[in-house]
Image (tube, rainbow, N blue to C red; front, side, top):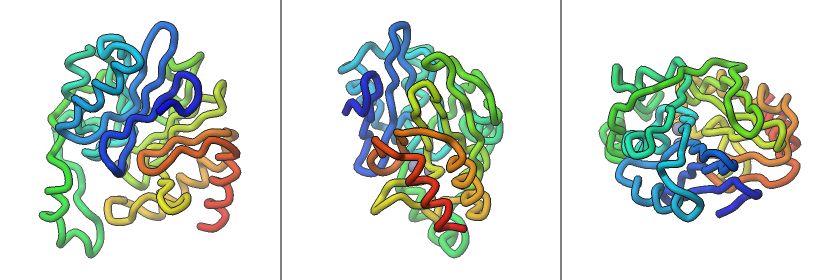
Length: 227
Ligand SMILES: [Zn+2]
Ligand SMILES: [Zn+2]
């Protein structure tokens, strides 16, 4: 699905989305969907270009519904893999990520079945807040911790566009990320306030439909509601 010219949502399963960003000289993939769905991701890429032309894969956070097909896509394309410093060790498989939070931790074994673990993958560049990346004339990385310690959003000011990852979800309306998998809810609210300070028209989420107009106003309303 083309959201705006050159930017495509890839539905890798019923709940989650990855995004493909086409420029004249390269393709950029933002997140990669669930394990075992790399054929879906590849097929979606091939409707637009070639997997071999994916030059960079930006991972918004380590969760398996975002990194599941990363190993296969990275290997096939040779793309640079970009992950925030705090989530990079989990993507590399150097340590496990935290499981479900609060009372839900007793249901850990249930959640393990939701997605098979992602295969460990190389990380070529570790990201920090404020980093510039080579996307559409320059995009900015925003560190938005809370959902995971190393969650990021990608802001493309030239297109008035934000990729929020799971810092928010647009499922039954715009809302904070799902609680059970969110490591720190106070931090997650602060991250929404941080995103509310930006100016953008379009916002894309890991879960739920993109907002295609007045998106920063909707984010500001959410931030005000959360207090
Ligand atoms: Zn997540
Ligand atoms: Zn997710």
